[in-house]
Figure 1 (spheres, rainbow, N blue to C red):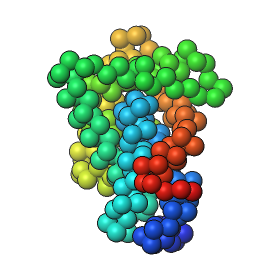
Figure 2 (cartoon, rainbow, N blue to C red; figure 1 turned 90 degrees about the horizontal axis):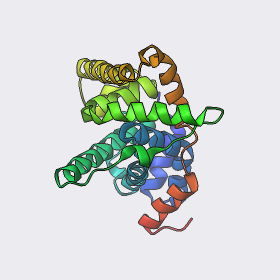
Figure 3 (cartoon, helix red, strand yellow; figure 1 turned 90 degrees about the vertical axis):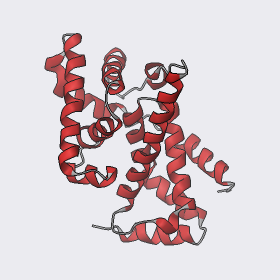
Length: 219
């Protein structure tokens, strides 16, 4: 179901209303930030993607597809820019530049043990390194963001069958990584934990300032 107020904000953005863009970020900045973070396991990369997504909304608002909801449109852009970031990472590796995503992540979750936090995310990110981009985004969307396979397929542009297969393969790789450390039985518990760990990691003020600075806007 479409949110009428979202459509109103899109219309205002098309008129060059920066306050409307700010309102969209109030609603969806956390969603874009945590999803890109889960796909990339890289805080710097996540910030880059988040800024690019909202910049693209401002610049490409006339391309907005109102057949889908705004949150789905933003997640589609999140996937596009995350995929570009993954390609960049692979090119850097070819030239001998190794991006240590474990150092760049270091997330924390309130009321959770810091050691378990880092251990869970390191295991997840190690498995993520062996996933295809489609497997990584499908797992992030379906398992961690808890979207349906149909919703995830709309975001990636893949079939539901391919999305389901990608989730299964990603799950196998995560279970394999857990098995290496004797923690395979903790799969469900770790997933519950991983859903919480990125909830409070978004530096909203920093990201807002970056978006408006890049767009040359004052608000």
